[in-house]
Length: 224
Image 1 (cartoon, rainbow, N blue to C red):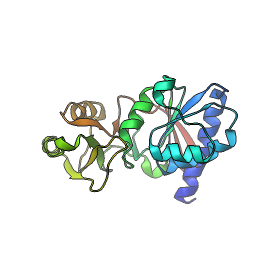
Image 2: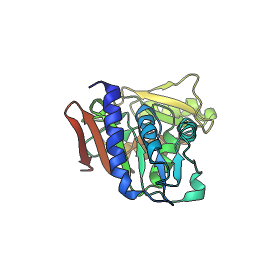
Image 3: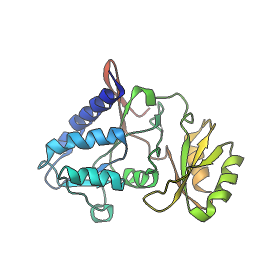
């Protein structure tokens, strides 16, 4: 199977997972990226079975609207029964690196408000240790150089993602060559740096279920 076929397979599996949770008053959380897009496209067939969605990015919101799915602000809704999103890396504890699409802050907020987080990914995203994928850190623009120096002290090689502004109007530093042995501790340490909005480690709020697509099918993995 191609990578696109694997993404579609996990999106289909996610539809099966969320279907029992749907209802006329139900609003679900939806992430950002190519795998989340596959989920959105499949979700369109379920119009009428749920109220709408909260999106973690403007791009996802536009895709939902293009399918006729109502999009709500999170402040209108509060708690969500489920959040479905992809990952750039995921380990056995279902800790993740996310934010390759620069939507990490809104993704983290929506995930925090969800009772259940379902991660959908192809097998290439599963790793033993996080950090091969550059860890994104969203920063207030005036603090970028300061934060970069602090990240270097933690062992990372921060690189400014030129030409990228988040939906929040902030900038991204991508941390290369950053082996992360303790994601929970590192997530907190980076978030404590003045000028950091948040970082792309999803360990404090990891996934509850991973739907992992491979040539042998979709594997369901619960958090260890």
